Length: 368
Image (cartoon, rainbow, N blue to C red; front, top):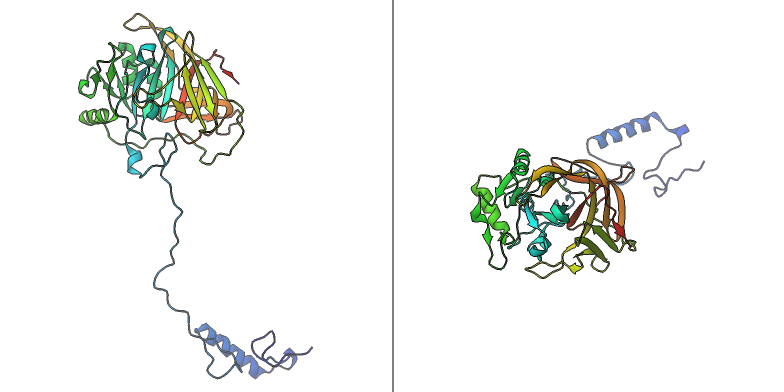
């Protein structure tokens, strides 16, 4: 086999054939390896004094930039300016929805809104405010049994105007930080533009100040809803959802593909915010079927209170991006409800606000 002795072949130094390698060469090679171990690298025949210096001593470990961690509001998934802002308490406000109360104020700035039945097929809202701080909220009315199930899931400050005594006993036994207007009148005001009892209003700032005065915690770590931050663009398959609460209180949600939202109509009228004039709209609309029954409890008008169970599990349909996702809801104290397909896969929400329509288990919604 021919051996390249020129120094320009595949080896950096001339080599003798293995068969003719002498003991002297073996010793020389051992010495070269020993020199390399001491931080010196040389090569016989590569030129006098051809020595490379040792590796420089590092003064500090090499650092790596961490991935950017985005701070998001837990109930909308939208970006927040800083972490501290997201740690303020959620404020829950009981808002009326009788014809005399419309248009309402502040609902367009709520992160989550529950709509539940009261007497006479009229509905009432429990609005969760967190990422936004409306200056006017109302009209505010009394608590209902459904609140005893909803409130422990968000641990909010609860703003309302009284409630039937047995209802309030249930709400307070759930460990709610209560901000009843009857005991905190300074946080509320009555407007002259509407007759009683449809004229009680407040602001988020007034409610937070009143909560601090009562010694309630001003901050909390709110458990988040589950969002899909990067949703695929799809062709709408459901462009309208109708929820029949009964009588003239049918609610219709029309999907606006350009804005990627659902616009609300009730009793044939587009609902708007009284202050801003903007249409009430939702990024997500969720229908939750629940067990509902009439109780022996009666309000001031003599109407029986409904027990609307919102813990445990039940059937659900989630509407997002013009699509419908069917499955089950699960809810217990300590966290907002979770939604999953019948196969157990999470049904994720689009980033933005959510309206939850709570209907009796026998209700049939319609879509097109």
